[in-house]
Image 1 (tube, one colour):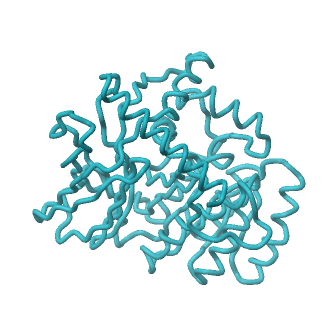
Image 2: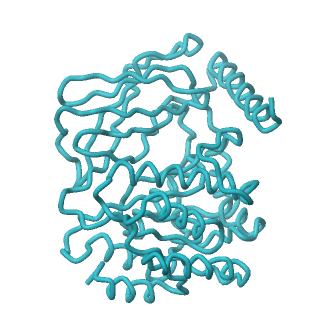
Length: 367
């Protein structure tokens, strides 16, 4: 067994042991189903979530100290997930769909509805999910553990979809500097983070396209861990950035989903594989829908998007890469811009979102 897999397995084993011990001593907080916003079509829903103990987070404020934010982060990452539990998703047609949580408490369902439920918001459809059975070591009532998963179904009138990164694309993370990145992640919250100037307005214009209706779906694909889901969802809401599925990453270091290209290794390979896998799934789900891609020069977004164009020819209308002001990273983007230009796919390296919006207007993507 390779070392990363061994470390991952050991971490899962110790987590399970501590969860059992906490449950038997009565220390385990009430369980909840964390259902992540996801996506689908009129004939297929993709649902993902996690069963875990309530981390006991309190509402954040813009004046919270760095220490308080750090303690909240510790609670997020010190999760007590529940493996081996049976959950049931129920649809309006009366069908029930069973799934069992994996070793880290995650569950994934792909189901085919015979009829759409009534939307809870424009484009968003609810799917009730509840616990049907808990592992025997958890002698807890489970009938009240339930939630609703929200599934985005783009309308037929959608002109295009938008796939966006988050870190250093929507807000500053400084991913090119590990110490700055850790400081920004560990000591901030949804209230204290600020989006880049103009990004919210630009994204809303993309969402409304040429028709003026908010029909164009957004998908946020990030290498941030699922543990940060609540904070990222709250951040997007606070700054009125278009709501979309958040497709984050399992922290496990032993489960790559897609093989990265030669020369991409280490953390860059994990980032590359995760994002390419999720983007492939989105484009496959909506084969008739073109897309706009948004990312930054700080990591591998330009190369990932180059591979997306190769795998899905004719599907990408434009690519916007925010310049993180690191010259050696910008130098890597230049050749990709030239290569895609020869293929008729515009990729721009932009210092601000006003430039991106002007370019999108020139292409007829927005008014």
